[in-house]
Length: 299
Ligand SMILES: NC(=O)c1ccc[n+]([C@@H]2O[C@H](COP(=O)([O-])OP(=O)(O)OC[C@H]3O[C@@H](n4cnc5c(N)ncnc54)[C@H](O)[C@@H]3O)[C@@H](O)[C@H]2O)c1
Image (tube, rainbow, N blue to C red):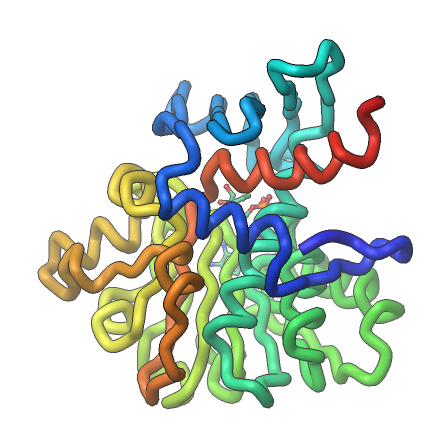
């Protein structure tokens, strides 16, 4: 996935995040678990791509009382080049988190899915919607936030990009997911955003929000009854509050979790089960975006 000159995302099935996740599953990256400081207020992430001898290091601070919540720096370098690329961590993070949700939605959502409910109208929200719209053109968008001003502001911001999409806003997630084909969860919530019964029988859910064991967006019952795709097992077992909660409650087992790279390498025919894509975000994604930038901007 990349971005067009108009700022709209472009997802290609052979794009970098797809290659990146397939490469991650194949062991092409050295990627330590990220360092989490001050209970998640500072994160340091790094990834090294062996074949290109290139590496990315991202350092960021996170503060949900601030907008944007994420601020920091990405540095990309290659042993064969003297120049390094320095980029804004907030922008790279929203791009790569949108990109992976576009890839997962393209893989997992039914072909005609055109009704999206986005829960969480913060910094990640716009690129979540843009990514889904790129792979499944939206007929309807419901923007949900517990703060109605945030939901309204995001709906207004996106309206010019979503010609022909009917857009509405809501504050209650449970009543806003009942007719969705796709749900994107992008909040800093610490308990499930909706009960499993609130969802339709066929739905694809992306959940990017919870990145600490104390955070959760999804109920155990949804994870237990869905095909669950994750970004990377070690990171998920370290950080994903909802997966850890569901494992502890014996609602799922580790064997139920399928890494995205594996799913992309051997796609299976869509089944009748609901699908969930859970990502906590891994450094390879930042490496992939930084490499696109380096190819474009470094001499
Ligand atoms: N998975 C990843 O790769 C990845 C990448 C970036 C950010 N994140 C995480 O995603 C989350 C969102 O990030 P952000 O930068 O958009 O944060 P943000 O603070 O800008 O926005 C979060 C929004 O969620 C809303 N919200 C919180 N609880 C809610 C609820 N119960 N119902 C409805 N709305 C609710 C808030 O009002 C806020 O508008 C954070 O937890 C962040 O750490 C994950």
